Image 1 (cartoon, rainbow, N blue to C red):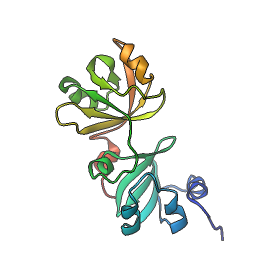
Image 2 (tube, rainbow, N blue to C red):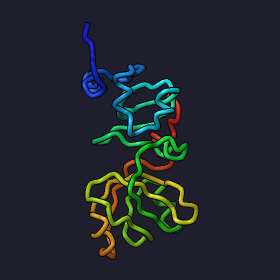
Image 3 (tube, rainbow, N blue to C red):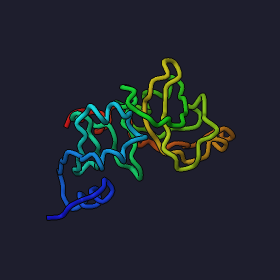
Image 4 (spheres, rainbow, N blue to C red):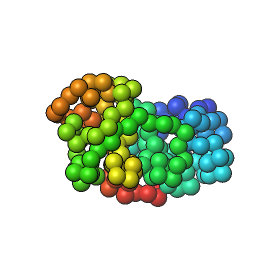
Length: 172
């Protein structure tokens, strides 16, 4: 019998299996501190799930995190305010919303506000300007300073957005 002692080793093992679901142990859950609020980690059933769409951490059956290169919160987790991470942001105008929620990459002309602290290749949150609601997560193609000086072109690659497979799955 193979015993897995932490979340990282467990996930490497899970790559060999598809459609696998497992309740995480306390040791594995400790590694999620700093990503999800501690009271949620204590009160919720925390599980790992893997299928053809990727790797996910579930809280009470709902997708809370997905694996990119690092664990990224889902938009649902952000909306429920279960996050401990504060993502850097770009704000898009009303004209860009319909494109963002359909998975389009973010073009510089549609952005009204940029966090100057954004680093290239960093996971960032894309929000709309009227209600300040999250629309998507993306990967910064430029630093915040470079985005501010750019006048055209693609500046953020879409990663997870309202209406994508992760959003529509909600419960597993």
